[in-house]
Length: 275
Ligand SMILES: NC(=O)c1ccc[n+]([C@@H]2O[C@H](COP(=O)([O-])OP(=O)(O)OC[C@H]3O[C@@H](n4cnc5c(N)ncnc54)[C@H](OP(=O)(O)O)[C@@H]3O)[C@@H](O)[C@H]2O)c1
Image (cartoon, rainbow, N blue to C red; front, side):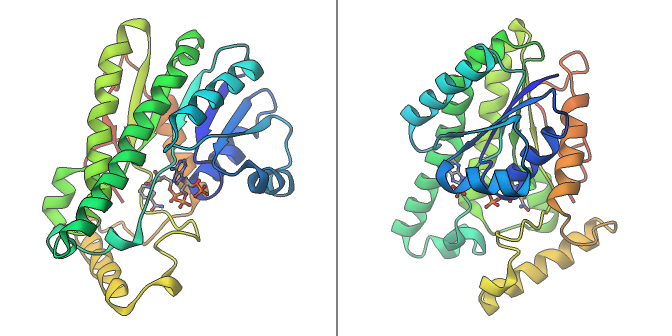
């Protein structure tokens, strides 16, 4: 029996967390979403379990996160065991170009970087801060940030992963922020970890090739070929079901005693194989 909070639970990987974590009827699963009015009916029809509670919260709005924490405390008696910071901004404008190309219009580059930093870094730090009092009262005291291989220097350098600069900078910055939070709260029994979920076909992200231009499709194909070279086991995107199962396996196994606090690993549980 455990209590989980999952942010960005409306769709994709976050929605799959709701599904897998609610299988055990003894678990209480809180999903934080930006638009509960559209997510609640979806959860009812596609999962249909009464141990899931949907609450409003937006990473760009501190007050909404604070309210989400207060509303969660009322449901869970003031304590949670696990916090999963999954929500994130992924903008098409900067997804498939390098920082040099993006910066040809420096205003666009600055806006993209600022927007990613606001949502994916500041928003996530606020999320951890408002839920920390609840986590500190929980039994497990574990937090997870869903990061990305884009934030790993070796991967960027080995395959010359040049695109999605603002997103990658945000993920790398948040990996550091998470390690800082872990360092701050470790003495109180908290263990925080960043895990990349792999390349996951959620059906609504950038792997939805119908939405991409020819140039963007070329970048995706080049990326696939590079990954296949460095990771011969890479057979293409995995399903949200497989990704979340693997991420939860790594997360549940991770412990402060094993030195996992503040680390950044893949869904394989290491920092070498990202896909
Ligand atoms: N899919 C992949 O291959 C992949 C690879 C590496 C890392 N990731 C990471 O995995 C996480 C989930 O991604 P996904 O692939 O499942 O993407 P997705 O299907 O597009 O879902 C993104 C989620 O983030 C939420 N979100 C966006 N902006 C937000 C904000 N300002 N405040 C709160 N929530 C916000 C979205 O809510 P709305 O429905 O309200 O927009 C949605 O629930 C992200 O952190 C992403 O960076 C994904």
